[in-house]
Image (cartoon, rainbow, N blue to C red):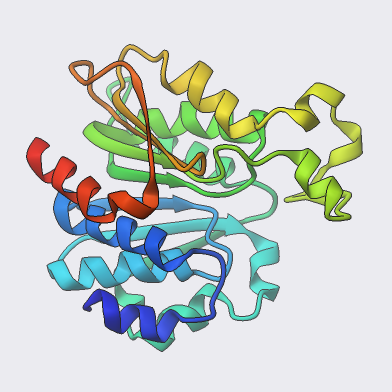
Length: 246
């Protein structure tokens, strides 16, 4: 499905902007990941754009995982994908309180002769924004990500302090006031990316876009510095950068 057609049908469904969606769509077209997984799907808007790109390629599959509470969202991911006519490209899974339990089961299923056989080419972590939950998600996802594959984190600079200022006392099942003051103030995803991902010897080609999206490729030969870039001016530039490396 062409991007413009997907954008028309997904208009008004939260929580991804059109230019972020274009970057994600172009990434799928350029890198052509065969097996993708999205951790945290909410209403399924981002899922819809990825499914549209897979449909445009004519191959590939997206696994979407979130918590049971997502069944109550309006619209649900099922309704979003049905509206696009792209449900066949997506498998939807829900866990009671964390997508990490899905990843745990995936690791179990991929054990071959005492080793975990990777099964994904792209991992999109777009869920809890919590050091403990998403730090563990990275550890598990790393076992499942194939060499040369990409991992993307959303909400790089998001803080619990921002949620408190908007009157929220809990997010994704985490009670904010039970956290330490420094964890509330510090962007948890940035800590995960900067301390765990960017220091990992098996990863490189780090990109942080507009302090919201953070990319890394599973390669020991990639660029080690973290580049700060702008989403707004990189929609086509990022695609060229991915294409130049393929």
